Image (cartoon, rainbow over all chains, first blue to last red; front, side, top):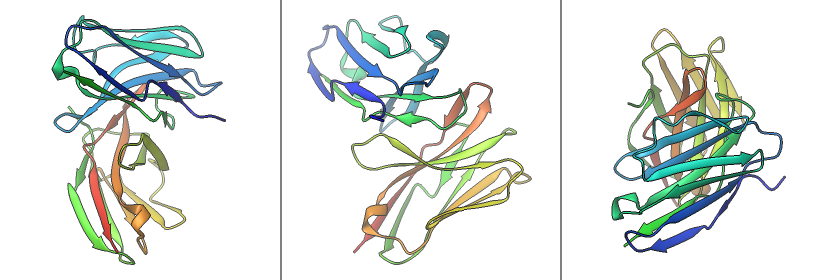
Length: 113
Length: 110
């Protein structure tokens, strides 16, 4: 199995630009998570999908962030407009259930200038 | 707020020594998991211990769980340079998601 796939691995953009991060979960997993990791705040859960339906988006910082999961094999996290404080590593993880073992992707390192 | 809190925040040991880190949590759990994160990589699952288990082993890893004290420990025996990483505990504090601690950064010196 290829594991969780994320793209791009690195993204550098300017403030105000739209950023789209992509994730392909492990086939057969029905739960998908987006996390953000920074030195200051550690690992934060942004949003959780179960069977392609957003269950908990309470961690999404503000309306500039949106996430979709149009099918079981693809999810996006969009930031529009981006701000320097959005600079972080964004991880996607999938599992067979909410509290089961989570499998993390390699992350996308986002830098907003 | 984070359910699990690791202690210490950072640990530096000599290759071959054992490394022990602890995790404390606040509410009842069904299971507790430990993950490792190497620099620049995603988290990797190491071991899961259920609330009715007291100790679990996996290779050079030994995990204990004391539900009365709401704490867990992760012991890495005979450490190697490749064990240099951050280690996180995660609890199923809520029905559908895990709560990760801030992590312990372990440095193994050659």
